[in-house]
Image 1 (spheres, helix red, strand yellow):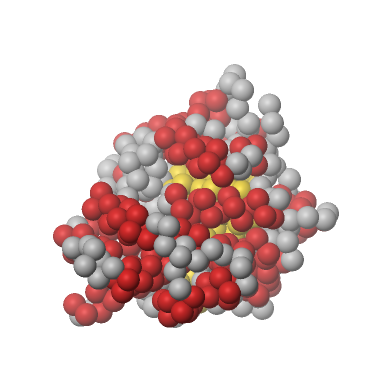
Image 2 (tube, rainbow, N blue to C red):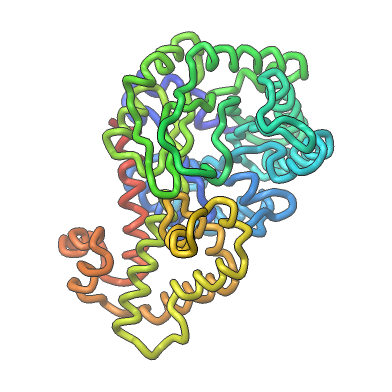
Length: 426
């Protein structure tokens, strides 16, 4: 049985090599392909995470079960010749969130089924998130209840693979967990997790795991989710301020074998990412920032195609996404506010990037396929790249990126990923 690649992540800073790891939270095939190509360049392991809303026993919004997602990632790895033993699959926000409209016991039963499926499918990093209230409960639960439910899920995961030739999973715990899918409103400031709260969270979870008969699993808790003071809303980003997080970072000295996991690090500067890793936030989660970059590239290609082939399509990609999102507002309606004009702007250009939920939609997927097919084999003029894809212009001029549609889309995502991988090696 292979040892879990993350089991000693708390010791990484003491030796040469990576000091942390980016967590690629996306189910988009182009994002995953770009991540594999970047990890190949870095000769690094690659952590890919699926959330409870993306992937679950009911299919999630991607239509994939955990086993489906495993096969999906393996297929991309085969195509780009990425070694499968360097892939770490993670499950994010595993808990009752998709079913929180149900009574707690019913929602937790479904969460158990989900985490069992994740464990059986070879996911070896499991983030336990039971912080949300279910039907009839407060929005936020007491730490003791959260810990008890988290331990219950860990015990279920352990039982699901007992006796099987599976790599033992590592676990991420924490009660100050951002909402899956992004902030619900514009943000001005954030409260950094109090250091005593982080220490108490780990202590409470240890007791809960022992009570649930999962003490061995607690020995594989390698991270705790905390709030280091980073987040993004629809139109703004709250930057990391390491001075405000200094006491929280110092509390890691009391948590042997544990690092902090930072959610919502999207859109942070390269310097901020390096500071986060240096301060003990060794797992940097990024998702919307990657699909935001991909959307920028696809929209740029959309404009290029409209200029080069003005009569070739009935609708542009942007027109199709607007039509579908207006017809099916479930994934953005409660997140975007203001006038009709403001909501239209947010649908396409919000930092929260809720357009990412629509890329698997048959109409949108067909529009992307039509766009890429229209540009297939076309060498795009550097001047058009300067106009519509300026972030790739220098790389094209330098010969690093081919002036063609798919390489340009991958390169847009890679520019974001490069900052993360560099930050984890600084």
